[in-house]
Figure (cartoon, rainbow, N blue to C red):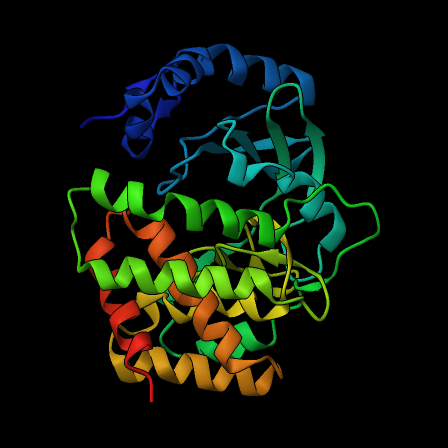
Length: 297
């Protein structure tokens, strides 16, 4: 489907079309022209460019602010994106894109521009898993932080698995959903050794090359909880290679180098991957990853 223009120069990417399926999504999309104009005025932006591709829950456009290249991000009010600004503020540019300004009433974030901005997933000349292992983002959550607890989110995933599996038309074997539910149940019953700020969507297209600090993460979708969960999005990241051996390699290497509990990381990956799979365009790849992880021995 072709992009829809919301002004004289800026178009809504087709990747946001799925929002039309809900009333909340339709209302937000219909408000985008006003939101964009208001945010540009609020931050004093000029030279608004065409949206970046690939955004599924936000409109993200390049712009200029006080003579500098910046990025304006307008967020759909999805619960997974809540407190992204606070997470970026906690990281304060270390391993992540820097938050410049925030207008929560508009769902608008003003961010530094990553240049050259190449996706880590697309750079096959470097040790990409080594980049992930050296990423500086996960660290202890500050006292009184506003972030959703991993245990609470995991309980929500667990309780919705059966419904989502059936609503999706039972697209995989039931034992995959059953195994994910058990993994999440067991993990929620165990007390976490410590609590860190987690980037629950840290895959190869959410890490960009930067002149400031080589590689910077974007789109954190923050949670606070078990450090072992941090491996989940990378273990299932098929852009780093989609085979049983490659998924296990990521799990083995990262758990060893980062000194994280391998079994907890495996179970977190099984649980979150299944929870996210039913609404994903890559559902079958995710099901394959879970089959491999369940056959781990």
